[in-house]
Amino acid sequence: MLTRLEIRGFKNLLDVQVDFGPFTCIAGANGMGKSNVFDAIEFLSYLATDPLMEASQRVRGASGMRGGDPRDLFWDGYRDHQRKMSFAVEMIVPAEVEDDLGAPAKPTTTFLRYELDLGFSDPVGESSMGRLTLEREELRHITRGDAPRHLKFPHNVKNFRNTIVAGQRRGGAFLSTHERENGTVINVHGDGGSFGKPQPRAAARAGRTVLSTVTTNDYPTILAARREMQSWHRLALEPSALRAPDGFVDPRSMETNGRHLASTLYRIANDTSYASGDVDAEAVYAQVSDRLSDLSGVSVESIVVEPDQVREVFTLFLTERSGLQLPARALSEGTLRFLALCVLLEDPSFTGLICMEEPENGIHPANLPAMVQLVRDLAVDPTQAPGAENPFRQVIINTHAPGVVQLCDPADLLLAETRPQRAQDGSVTTALALLPYYKSWRAARGARSFSEGDVVAYLAAPAGAQLRLPLEMIG
Image (tube, helix red, strand yellow):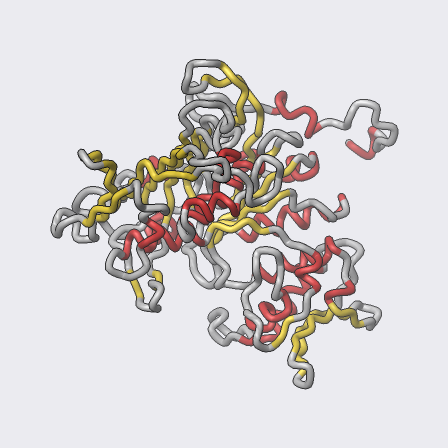
């Protein structure tokens, strides 16, 4: 779980500091830069696996395309000045992970703060476009005693916090940065604290974050931080992927574009370890169909995945109340996206952070309440202990739709605005700010926030509206 994100110098995020809970909705106008927050989270996830340059190529550039010039990722990246971007995240990591060889690893502490500074090395020659450089990397623990100051969102202490914040650390950092005569060094420290000699890595020759190089259980806490960051995904459900057939040999976990919808539901329905009690395949299918029935205009009698032994493919069928049976590929795009989220809701193995752009797309206004409630229900319930019945998932969405804003709890909202900010060179410029609701747990004394007066455009009918409800119906 990503509980805090600090970004400096990434795209139009000159200086953004934001706390997250289980569910967050970022609201703002088109072109405001809301998606850049998701780009930053996605970039950090890529950096936990890929070399610096490969990670930069996977992130959306200034043109909206991937694979562009790495200067696209820096604030004012094409001006002739020193380019630097900094990230800091506070996160709850899994209590147990597997290393790349399948061996178990248990971190000594699960509440961590990770800091990363990246620079830019100018192009050498006309055919080069420069490269990212590793400047600083730190990984430190947050003690259980300090946890209440960092976990600000409402939660149950006994059931939730005491379950997810575990272990202790006797010593300093797990990753630390030191300047030496021959250059910057990133030290890797073991879980034994001050015991044992740290392993130095030269930053100039790294080519990737040091965290991404930890692949075995020799450093279990660093590995757990890496696994947590690898679980941060941008969910972009595509109709073509949702309609694609699934063979018996295909993966049985849904991809971020919705591929393997049918095989994923088949696996959930037939997994005996799915949940405690007498949950069986029919019950799982019934839960998915009941949730899909929340969509008005969709007549659902039942849903089932049928394996075709001859063609060796899975087909997801929806049977309407009239008796008409339809394959999933015949459903509308909006219905398919909603169905995919219904399936993910029933998948206890699908955990981590989910970023979703404008989940209301393709949804009829009458179905907005069902969609907002569904994405909210995907997130972990912080009043209960995480587990198979309460998967440890976190959801962040963005929107510019008034209906979505009106349906969200104000405490879950962040208002995206561009505001004057002071750059590193002392100049005043305009950059993105994320403002919490003034009565919410995110609001801090003396810090900027928003009230109902700042979001009138989301709460009132637009100027010139020609069709309104009569006053007696509104009352």
